[in-house]
Amino acid sequence: MANVRFFEEFLSHISVERGLSLNTTSAYRRDLSNFSQFLTREVINLENVRLEHLEKFISESRRRELSPSSTARLAVTLRSFFKFYAKETGVENPARDLKPAKLPRRLPKALSITDVTKLIESAPNSGHGLRDRALLELLYATGARVSEVIALNLTDLKSDGEDIQTVKLYGKGRKERVVPIGKLARHELEQYLVTIRPSLSEKSRNRTDALFLNSRGGRLSRQSAWKIVCETAQRAGINSISPHSLRHSFATHLLDGGADIRIVQELLGHSSVTTTQIYTMITIEKIRESYISAHPRAK
Image 1 (cartoon, rainbow, N blue to C red):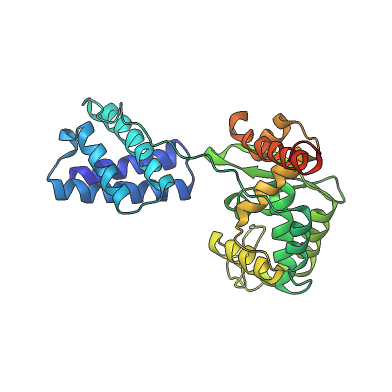
Image 2: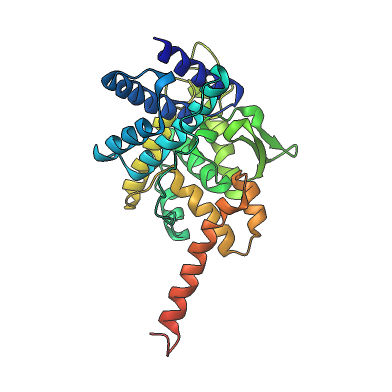
């Protein structure tokens, strides 16, 4: 039971004091639940955990065909938890020398500009489709994470008195950033706000300030936003995309168009430009492919 108490205190700490997102906290909770089951099987209390126990747990998780990214996250979860536990109890931190597995660097997949247009235009231009078009336009116009977009309230839209000009997004750790939006996204948002949102809002007993509403008048969920993107992509004949594909496309298209990487970093809400640099690799790869196909002595 003592194990469970410390796990819950840690989860409360990262959620409340460190301000980590619900999705991140849920992932940590799953990892610690699996680790708790491992401790029970091995009959080990937290104060007796050693580095070899942690390595054994991660090795077993890898053999269960856990994805490389999930296995790498386990080490991060354990390092973070035991740093907290050691500080709370004064015991030696067994995870100090635990090394996360190195992941092969995969380039994010961006849609072409043609496919982005096809995707957005595949959402119906009436009824709930107006909400879906506004959602898709905003994801692409801002490069926002889907969790950031569904968390938006009406008060996060800023206008110049006539048109919506910027949107305030809340990233990881509730860090704020203000992102401009272009003409097409403004048009779709205003269409949704004027024609569909009022009727959706009337369906709820408890009126909400949420920007995007579901069919019952409540805040649109992350799962519903994913479903909208995937089903619209199916209609457009585009395979294997997610809301994050629009974020990747946003960054790639800006850099292809000559935007400064530091500006793209700010717009994406990355704390380090190193994270943003992966998108420059996509652009370089495109240049390389063009060079090989066009230069007479490069083939």
